Length: 231
Image (cartoon, rainbow, N blue to C red; front, side, top):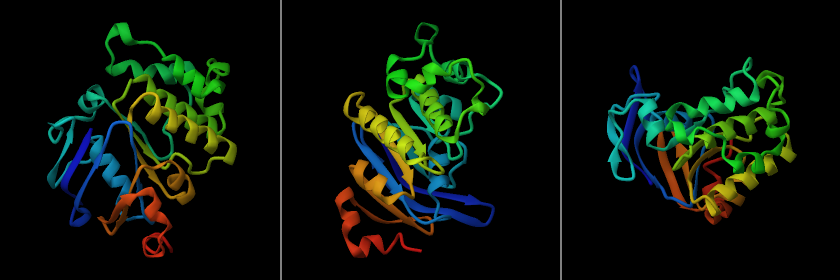
């Protein structure tokens, strides 16, 4: 579904990504791990078009996205749940979900049933303002909004950050459903090692803008691999 080929990205003179290559397959969960400041969020924002590449290429289903605007990438099937959620606090839950309609044809402008099946609290709070929800509920809203877009690739940047354990379990179940039942390619950035270990099919570990380890989730059990994640 997604192919990242030798991607480099700069902020001025600082190089944030240094020749990153990886793939994410349909019906698989691919997890990117690493300490703070190693380039994980820069990679996610490059994928969705928020940062321009210095070199390299990003493709979706074999189609190069390098010159595509974020809105074009969304219409192509990429949905992004950013770190910090970034919901609209003054809009209701219903209105936040409906912002996902922007890239859809008129006939598809509805909230899929599985959004409320995965996150029933959203159905109960449709009339409440997004800013009145708890952090965990806002995270569920952010994921629900992304799913309204009927994505082929779902990009999640640290969805468990600051979330209570019961909602982390709900988010984990939702991600599994999207992989196993909907066949979506899921690209997950995480610092919560156990969450990634339980969910991921493939893992990639970043250091200083590079991928230093790639392998199955079980490889996280090896001491030499875990050493890349210790502070």
